[in-house]
Length: 97
Image 1 (tube, rainbow, N blue to C red):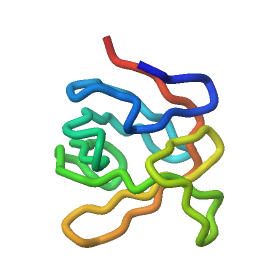
Image 2: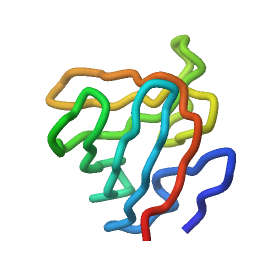
Image 3: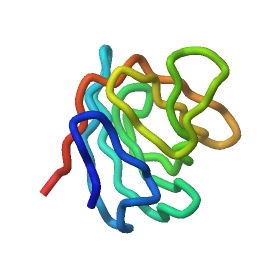
C-alpha cells in the first residue's frame, strides 16, 4: 500500500484497505471497495452513517481536479448518490490496522 505523508492514489490501494482522513473540520473513515473506479464506503463529516461513494479526487478549491488522488492540504471530492461533496482541507491521512 502506498500512503505517504503527502497523499495517495486510490488506485494504489487494495480492496478492504481502511483509512482515517482528518480534515480541517471533520474526521472521515474510508474502506476501499474497488480502487480501479474509486468506490469506497465512507462515514464521518456529512455522513453520520456509512454510505457508498466514489472518491473522485482532490483539488485546491478550484475546478482543477487531481483525479483519484487524496493529498494533504487539498479538498477531497466525493460523489454520493449523484451529489458532489467537497470536504475542508485534508490535514492527515492514516491507515487503520
